[in-house]
Image (spheres, rainbow, N blue to C red):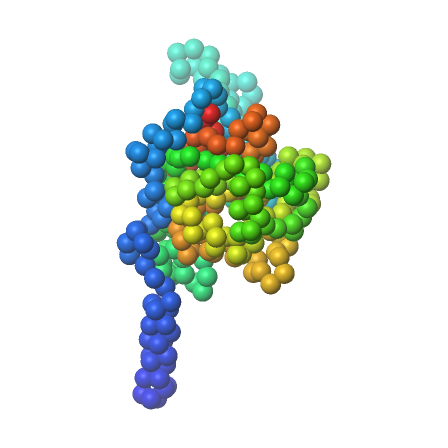
Length: 314
C-alpha cells in the first residue's frame, strides 16, 4: 500500500469517527454514565411510590417459564434436576445423618419470558448507550460495560395504560400499533398521568390471550409501540417502559417503521430500560393501574438481559 493510500484510508477512518462523534451526544448524566435512567431512582421518589401501597397487597408481574416457552430464535432453555453423588440410592452420611438433596442445572439464553433489557442489548451502527463502541464492551465472556449486574434496584411509581380497552378489545391483534396520539388519549380517558422517573407499562391482552392458546403466534408477532411512540415516551423521561408482550414494539411494524427501532430509541439513544412480558392483566382486574414497582434483578456479571419477576405493591 502506498503512503498516499495509507494516508487516504487514515483520513477516511478519522472522518468517520469524527462524524460519529458529532452525531453521538454524551448522556445527560455524563460521558462516563453506564446506568442511564436508573439515575432517576431517588429516596424522594421511592417514598412517594410507597404511598401507593393502600391495601398491603403484592402481585408478581413475571410469568412462569420453561423449555416450551416461545422465545426469539435461537433462544432456548433446558433444566435438569440432579442428585449429585447419590446414585443407586446412596445417602450423604457425611452430613451426620442419611441426607439427600436435589440440585438444578440450567442451560439457557437469558432473554426468555419476563425480562429486563439492559442498555447493552440493542444499538445501532456498532454503538450502544452513551456512545459506547461494540469493540470496547462486547466481550464473549460478558459485557465490560452496561451489564445488568450494575443496574441498581429499580423502584418507583408504575402506571398501566390499558391499550386493549382503549381499542375496544380484549386482545389487540398482531401488528396492531399505538403511538403518541393513542397513548395520550388512553391516558386521558383512564385518568393516568405519566411523569419523570415513572415505570410506564402497556396492557394489550397479548400474553393472557395468546400465550397458552396459540404459543407459536404469541412468539412470532405482537401488538405494540410505533417508532414515533417510543420517541414520545422517551420525552417523558421514564425510568422504564414495558408491556405484556415479548418485545414491546409492534411486530410486524407499522408501515414505514423500522423493526424494533423503539428499542434503539429507548435503550441506545436515551438510556431507558425495557421490561418485556409484564403480566399486568391481573392487576387491572383488581382495579389497579397505579402502584409501587420493585425490581432487584439477578446480578450475573456482564449480562445483557435479566430474567425478572418484578413485584407490584398496592
